[in-house]
Length: 352
Image (cartoon, rainbow, N blue to C red; front, side, top):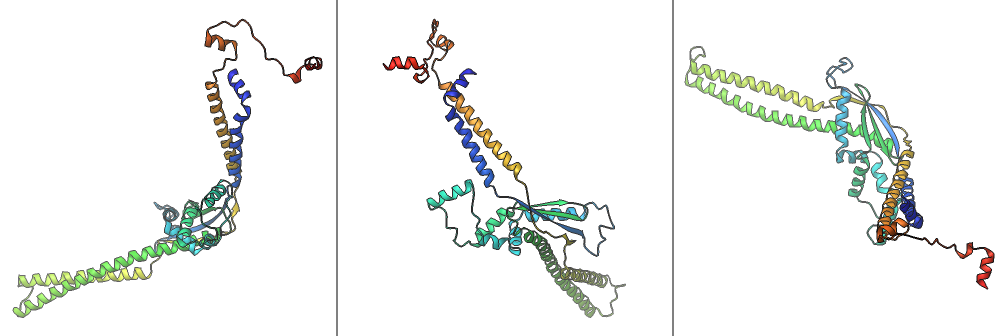
């Protein structure tokens, strides 16, 4: 342990330098991290009419709020939904026209890139692809969805600028309705197209069956289904074709009616819209960053000290000489004090 202490005292400035640098860098980074703000919105989910309301059926297998949470989380995981929300609200224009000054290490990196010509001017126009990329990067982890009850869901947004947050979060509700409605319309339109094909095929089958009955009647005047097995079979086929055609027509009418009256699978409306955003405290993050930097510097210092001790082969104590040379130490010459510490009388004698 004494060798470590002696080595540290001989190189104390160099060994303290990593701690000072790491502490300075971590403090610089912690103070340059942008502040975070939070706002939230609560929405109401219920089963759509004419189905029974979840208020009248308090114990369904899956509550409307749980279903809404799943759908919202899926939407927040898609880039297109986030981009649509940003363009519906003020975020897209904000990112296209506002370029906040970078601080901390990111500012240093940007400066170095600009010196080597690797970054464009901040006044250069921003194209839509860059804006969309910034939108997905910013909103990708900005939203959290939590269920407060069978019908109530809270959507929370955390972002670095409060100016666009309330309007952006309120745009989520409008975009949710449009996306769900559009998806249902696409599905219902596909159902209508399918049943139209089935109706056309059933119509052809019915026409062929009726033609067969008429042709048999013309070829066999006076034939009765009760006495003629062939005629009876043809009439049965025609009857089944008519039944199938009528059933498909009714299904097609229902599909068209569903397409005209398409709505979200759950009744949805905003209970508490997003208002002003509040600033979140970042003291814990700053403290953690500073401590992490201090620990990193301390580890580097310990490793450097261990390397210096391992590389230092100088004999400084009796046991070092005995261990290296195998010789017994009989006398020790102490280090002479420096001249400035000698008594005044001795200094005068030496000078004379």
